[in-house]
Image (cartoon, rainbow, N blue to C red):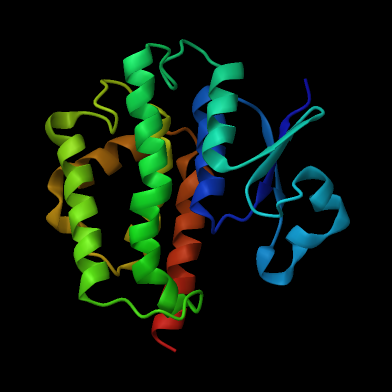
Length: 220
């Protein structure tokens, strides 16, 4: 079976979520860089794979899909081992899905509202409202993993952890957030990093790159 083709940039937390999903499940994949900074996402070749021209996207045989959390769910469903990464129990899966939507619409958004102005991606400078929102969101996340739980309240790692560790480590690498105040979240992050095979390749290196880019803009 040919490897899944994963298109994107290591800077992108959503791209790294897909890579970690493949690593945890032992799914062979081939990373194909698409640099959105220079318009590689607008080439005719890429638009055939993903007309919406965002990242990540995958090609699995003739099947193409974009949106990281949908991709992660697809991979975990098709290539599942014991089913624990994307639990089949209705209530547990619902909580995992809630965390995935939360990561996209709340967690990463709150972080981006603080980070993106410095990086030149937003004209809106963050104020007290945005910084307080991040603290509120981190407090919720810290509560979810209290007592050594994983992000969806499970005793084993799920897609919720992979999506949210990508966001968390992106924030961590910038040095722009007081993450050390959330001890349960810090312990969770260390645990998840240790459980992802080839973690540095799949997530660590990209998060570091993002942090370096952020810091270069902050000091400019």
